[in-house]
Structure formats: C-alpha cells, structure tokens
Image (cartoon, rainbow, N blue to C red; front, side, top):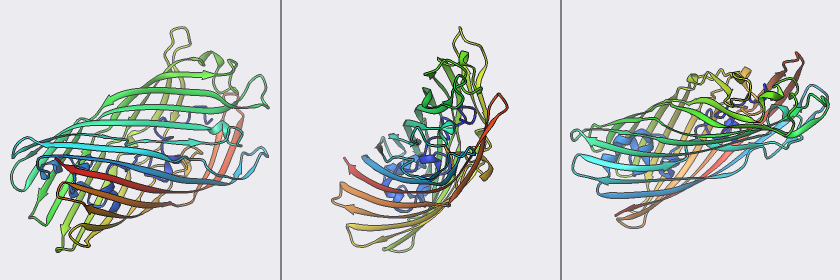
Length: 427
C-alpha cells in the first residue's frame, strides 16, 4: 500500500501515468491538433477546439461555430520480472490499464469585430489502472480510477489586426476511487483483495489566459497559461475489516469521512505556425508543466467521532516537465489535408520515486491525421497517435508502523494508441 494511500488521487490517473502524458495530463482536446502531435497547438487556431490551448485564437473564427469530437484511448502496460521480496514472484502481468473514450466539444460565437465568446467541455485527466486483486504487489495498489470533466466559459478580444488576447474560467469536476489489498493485523499471513477503499469527489475552479500575435497572414505565434486548480476531495475510507490494517493504519481511523487536498499543475505553452506555401505549413510547440507544485498527499479524517489528524501523509517528489513537438501539414487538394507530427514528453516521476501505480518514464509521440472539407460549413478531422514509453524499472519498499517492510520490484513496458475523430460546423 505504500502507507495504504500512497497513490495520489492525481498520480494514479493515467494508465499507470505513463503511456499518455507526463504525470496524468490527457491530451485529447482536439483531433486536428492531435494529427500534428499537438505541435503549434497554441498558435494553430485551425478550428475552435484549439481554444483549450490558447483562448485568444477564438478571434480567428467568424460567426457561430461548433466542434464535437471523441478520442479512443487504447493503452497497453505490461509488468515483467515481478517480485515482492517474499518469494511470491510472477513472471509477467498484462492488462494493467484499460481503454476509454474521452469526449470533447467547443462552441464559439462572434459578438462583433472585436469580441468572441465560447464554451468548451473536455476530459483533461482520467484513466483506470487495475491489477488482479491477488497479484503480488496488491498491498501497493489494486485499483486506481479517476474521472474528470472540465467546462470552460471563454472570451477573446481582438486588440488590433495583429494581436488578440483571451481568458477562460475552467470549472473542473474530479471523482476518484482507490483501493488496496492489505495484510490484516489479526491474520498477518492473509492477503485480502480490495480490502481498503477510498473514494471522493470535488468541483473547483481555475483560470486560463492566452495571447496570439500574427506577424502576417502566414506566420503567427501564441502563448497560453492554465493555472493550477486547488482541489479538496471529499469522500470516505472504508474497510471490510475494522481491525488494524497490517500495522499501517489503526482500525479506529477506518470507515469514516475523509478529505484530501491536491493541486493539479499550472501549464505554460508557446507555439508557432508558419504557412510555407499553398501546400505546406510547419509548426512547433513547447509546454512546461509545473508538477513540482504537487508536494504531498495528505488524507485527513473528518468524522467527529474518530481520532483527529492525518490518516496518511505521503511525500511526493514530482518534477516540472517539458513537452516538445514538431509538425507539418500538406494540402493534398481543395478538400483533403494531411497532418504529421512527433513529440517528446518528459516523465514527471524520477526513477527513485516510481511505484506500481506510477511507473512513469519519458515517452515519444508519432502522429498523423487527415482533414476533410465536406462543404463550406462542414468538415471532419481524423487522427492517429502511437506513444512509446521507455522501459521503466520499479523498486519500492512498503514500511509499516510495526517497523517491518515488504519490497516490490518489476519492469514495465508501456505504450498507447490514440484514435481521434471530430466534426466542425459553421452555422
């Protein structure tokens, strides 16, 4: 369990946090941008779905426009050479993570020559990691399920022919469910699957800022900033056995209401777009994600009839990460456009801080996509991405209050396939 609740309601999120994006950030807000591996996403503004990355780009879209899409996330994570330090070894474990659908949508309306407003809906974080309840590392974590939905009202203002600025108010709902097996104090040799469960949810608000500068009709640059969102999960912790859990958490602290404070990170991005000629366009993107703000996870008991104070406090050593992307687009004819892109995504967790819940490692993106202009009003975007992560080695130790400890080690091989599809309509 790594003190039972060692996982973070954040860090557990994405397919063992490794295949999709550093830490737990889902990049699925735009099928068009996905085709370029999100290169130039902050400057692209090809349709209004790009507003997630830079709200100022809304001023480029005339009239009323809508975008609706979905991304199918097909991750694969395998653990090999799995050992628990007590002789209960497994050769390998498959199907740790599960596929999911992530919807997204944006609608924008031009009020006048200066102002454009919009509303977006997306899933910036969320995934499921699930081990078999009897696997050898079950005391380090069985189930980690997090679902988020973010709705963002936005407004953009065209300062002049070259400069636009904008702002948004992300309203984010988070729901988490975490479970571990535990060695019961009454039967130290008995491992009970999914013995302890933690679940909670919250709604909190952040802010988004953006600016875009157009040098001419062919070249533009954009900058975007999304604030961290301070969440306080409210929920409960339950156990099938009220006795002390392996000396880790006293039974008197179980089966009560809890709260857990967690901060999703701030993000700064800058992107560039350049139309080389009638056929070719190139783009680039850099993003800094400030994961270092996530310092610890404290689980606090809230019930008046239970002992006060922390149930669990886990020190996290996450680091700020960098995301780099390069892309190009080629206009095949008046209806079809092809997109390409590659990216490098840095891991948020260092080697010494990897756990079975978060076997994070650096990863490389390879993306391609197509845009089809069916008519002046209706168009479609299709994208495919393959993400390959470096092999990750996990060596960790669970130390109980009794002073005893249990080791765990494994090698993880992670990858993911993303299939994005969206429809754009000009009313």
